[in-house]
Image (spheres, rainbow, N blue to C red):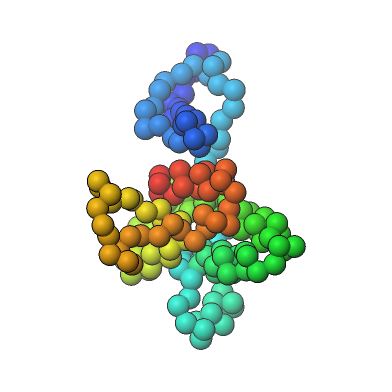
Amino acid sequence: INQCWKVQSIEQTADLTSVFTHKIDVVPTTSLAGYEDTSKQKFVTRYAPAPDRAANLEESGKSPLSIGHLILILRWCCQNFDQNLADLLAVRRLAEETTRLLGTDLSIHHKVGSPECARKAKRLELAMQLLDLFEVPIPPPNNENVAPGQMPRFGKMKEVLSSQVWNATKAQMAQE
């Protein structure tokens, strides 16, 4: 049997991050080294933002794990990263593993259409929470003067994550 598959390639960029190309090729099955069965993918978290008030936090503790809960873990990591050098590695490890789970779950949520099913306000709130953790500033053109507070800051997670995890996360978030 001569079978062919439609495949989407993953390319590695100069900064060693992997990005999906939008080009889809048709290749013979004999050329494939492996494949991913996306029908078996299941997300772990609900598509919901972190609670905005302490009262909502207690309620959210009674509901299933959400992306918002992962955001709360990452916020805690940011707050406790430079507190004690002995805990630095443990906090970084927790942040990196949580970031990997967050990135993977967001990717699966997008594949199955969770954002389209969520209310617009919930999608916007979740997007703003993710930007707060992972945004990167765009420098002003021609070194123009920018008023204090107008220049976006680096995402809070940049200082906590290793450069390898930061770069991989940024590449994955850009696709979402």
